[in-house]
Image (tube, rainbow, N blue to C red; front, side):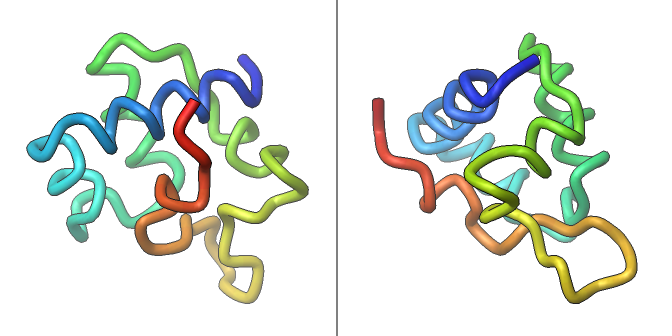
Length: 79
């Protein structure tokens, strides 16, 4: 999809305490888990959307697997 999909998902997480708790849990530690939850909530998002957003600012690059930074949605300004 695009950077807009990441922004839209971040705004939805900020607005929904239940979704925020789920996305902050160990159940959603990596990009694939976050994308699965996003798709369940109706968002069209791909793991590469996180990689490409703001030059990879949302991704922990020092780990073998692709993990999102904790509370990654807080790094995205409300729009």
